[in-house]
Image (cartoon, rainbow, N blue to C red):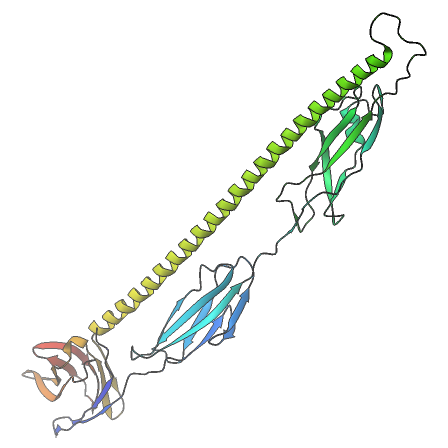
Length: 386
């Protein structure tokens, strides 16, 4: 691909009266300046633009001062939370001069909810004595329990949809029975990632036994010994329930910790995958932009075009020949129809020294039936009729 400065070759020709020429140089523009807007707001190099969380693209418009300059924008899509860089490279008409402008786009982070760290303790509920308990069954207990539970030292009140009888409440057996809250929808701005919940203890007291006034005479254990046996059995049963509860709580805590670790690993893998995908997309976009510039340059270098414009006294011929004609001699010829056929008159010729094949020729005004053609070797590369 060739990039060359534009030349102006001015040839003033008197039709049929002689040949003269003047030449001068007009360089391709080196103006690579431009104005920019991001999301409709004017910006300059180094500006920072703040956008809302979740924004993935911004609209960047680059308007070069010179209409022949080319602007290439990268980094305006695939935005991530935090700092992102948008780059605009404006290349002047000469294909060499360029100005790089950068903007910083800051995508706001998500506003984190406040985490519940613990539920406030609920006072034990006295349920009377075994055999004469206040609540006949678990449903009666649940009906009496509160429909909200406070957390983080009364910082928030969370609705309770129901209570679960964790320890199989038995009004006939003394003991402490745990009821666990099933939580409703958390208030806005709160999260419960740790899956905390509220519990309350329902306490059934042991019945008070009044010993008989006289020892037992049945020949078995005394009343005092029987009472000791009964209390020992009740304690053993309570200890068993407590041990089973402790084992269940430990298993639940272990399961929760494993689930939390798995979620953290999944989130980390997701973040890495997103970063890799963004990087790949940016690399593809940059490669496509470079390919587009190369293709445009190749098309321009191979293109041959021209324009013929007449005024009241002269004819101006503007040529843009393919770069491959660099260093060759171009002949400007006048075609005039006569009775004997078409007469070809060479008006002038010049060498395409600066290789971009551009030239402007000023001629005397053509008359009807006359045509202008440009010939290189035996090939006519351009032809036009007045």
